[in-house]
Amino acid sequence: MRLFVAINLPIEERERLSRAVRELQERTYPIRWVKAANVHLTLKFLGEVAEERLAVVSRAIDSATGDLVPFQLDVRDFGAFPSARRPRVVWAGIESCEALEALQDRLESDMESVGFEREQRPFHPHLTLGRPRKSASAGDFRGFDEAISRLTFHARLPVEAVDLMGSVLRPTGAVYTIIHSAALGRAS
Image (cartoon, rainbow, N blue to C red):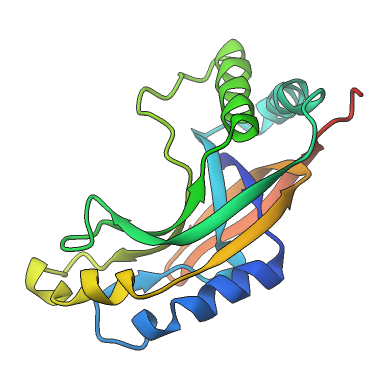
């Protein structure tokens, strides 16, 4: 099964994010928008994992999170990777903080200890909101950089748990399921 480790936002905040980008969604930009229910912060992508390894993966997540205390996440504004002139990912930004960096680093270490390769790219926390369609060309995004720069959003959200997520890819989009949830601060 296809797995990743994530922080799930409260559904009200996911819906608020979706409303904040509605102006972009209503334009003709060739973007496949992520359903509000699927918006999350990916901490570690694991890929295909055999079902018999679920217990080991869940214990590693518990180990990484058990003595970390809940914290706040600041979600702020919008952007695109690599740029808003030629986006590959449209995102809502997350201000990095010491607690988030520690959590992500611990997950990398504990997942490495059970056989998953450490991510080599730097961690850039963000919420993926959309991706261009395969048929999109650079000309399709005229004015996108200006349109996205006018949008604003801010939320301060509690992080109290980390979830192991299952992902099934369907023609209508990905379907996510929480496989295991690890509350922060269980060991204190």
